[in-house]
Image (cartoon, rainbow over all chains, first blue to last red; front, side, top):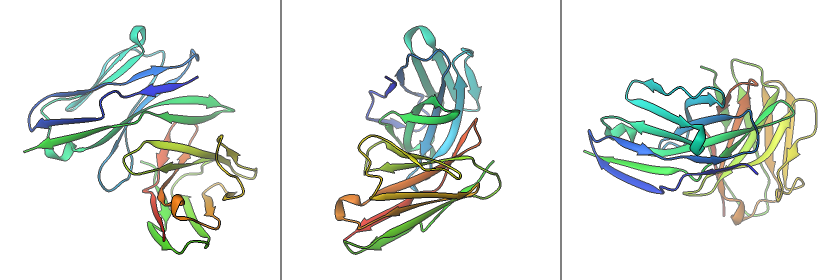
Length: 116
Length: 113
């Protein structure tokens, strides 16, 4: 069965610190997609990244970077030089393809608080 | 990027009433829409998958007679919570899929008194 584990429930950092959010997944599929979403206090989910199972290259987008390690089934997310605006709940998700639709299975989320 | 809207954003209703929530993809056609429920400080749980012109597929444990889903067009899906009770109070989020990406609506906060 598919499962996403985000072991860190809450993380608090001071502005400008780097922070890494962990994500471990389980799946029997050979083709799958992994996602990260940000949910600020307003509630709306903000898409951050989508990565397919065949692409293990790390990705950097500004202060955000992602490390995909298939060998350990992990897809970790690092924020460099964190800012107060980064405070949010971050969800890692795995897509389960079913009849050509993408059912997303979410982790329990990590609440990040960045203090000034 | 693609935009998905939800209406209403907040609703408060009395126990026993029915509430309809609309989800619209504003600038693209979505063959598939998803409905999620999120309890406070918890994760998003998929309730059902909605395909245009066909019956919704419900996840295990979700009552199809209580949560009625209609996907009448490629840009609109509705979720009706029938005979709502306080335990149905939650944050309901829809998403619309292009087949490659899911775009999420802003959510609807339902409070049942």
